[in-house]
Image (cartoon, rainbow over the protein chains, first blue to last red):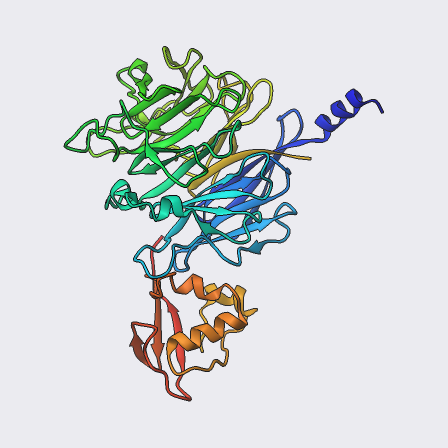
Length: 381
Length: 84
């Protein structure tokens, strides 16, 4: 078989997978190559809180789950065989003894740079950054942040409803030493030396809940994304709007001001097109008065921009048209790498919705699952 | 030691195990050596018993790992009730 034929055959046998982390376990959705039919399997770790379930795109095989239960402390489980067997980390993320900080839960998992196989990063609540060099078996704190002289000042003392978190760990594909993360609350932070030192990167980001509305740090980024092919382009969905930053610029632009006024630009997730840096999707929620955190007006809709946030289009075809009060958490919306792009979101009411055409039409993939905390995509060879 | 159901995956399903030590700390370390990973699920990295875990020595609540345990006493690890 010639290489081109082999590649075509490989694409035919590769199956898209969607990893679903929920408040009561993890589930997998496996599709056919055309993404027309899907099979739901699971639960894995029934009754356990799964904050994040992530497949390593570098090997297409290693899968990590950030797990705890209502009673038991946090840990990380890994599988190399699609969940048939699981191995618990022998040294889960934990702060250094002798202090006051203790990891309440592992909130976020990010596979490391493509040239650093086996490296993973984890973000925790309260805000801590951890690194594994052995595919999640053992974890060490990133001292450059966890013991940074300003860590406690940056992280603040707030207790957000589900606990303060460190999330959206982003690694520059051009340079593994260049990373970003977000803290809720705390803001956006950047390192250029592999995590030895960090600095706030929050110019232009509103913090309407603080006396100083545009502070150096203390903002609440809900979800940050870096474009994989254009890593100087960053977007983020904040507690106070949707923002874009083109590096080496320092000042974020609030592109959410271009959203319809009745919908606003509050939400949790933000998802980028894997190839087009000007196309992205958000899932707005009601952030008025007491912050209901529901779909605005009970009418859920995705909003898409194709011009970097200058204009937005509503995408609700196929979604419930009324009396649907779910929302989508920050880790629960993802794109695949297909053509056209497939989109997947999981709701607080336990449904998984998909669009195989970039959001133009939506269909429900699964229902009656527990509250969904995370949705990630991958390919099963 | 009486083991609660959330920890059966560590003890291989055993509901009761023998453990030695003069304090809860020593007993938990004994358990950890026998069932790796168990300690961190019930005690955090600063040595504090986790929020929804309770230790009883016989029928007395033992709020800290420093609490003494006499030979022959029964230790219960209990999972406090939590909703949802």
